[in-house]
Image 1 (cartoon, rainbow, N blue to C red):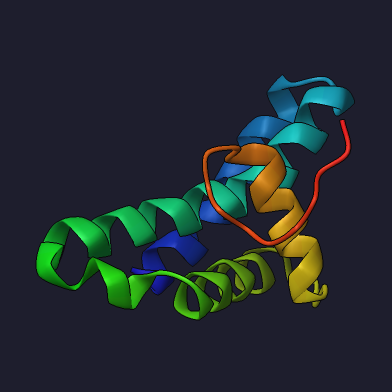
Image 2 (image 1 turned 180 degrees about the horizontal axis):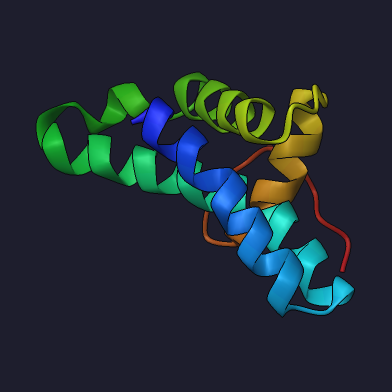
Length: 100
């Protein structure tokens, strides 16, 4: 899965860069890694419904941070990823406060 996502990411960058104005590109590049991480989390929850408690908390935090780092090559702190997650997925219980 990691290899396939890594192979498709440059293609998606090329499509978005060529077809979208800069303001929309920024939104895409800021949210795409989080959307992929959420999809992986939901797939694990679907495949192992009896073990969903294992995929919450620290596991989810590490998953989102790892995917963000893998796809962007930016090593940002975990609290920044938590902030971005809370901004994108308002229904999640993340221990970070978002000012809007």
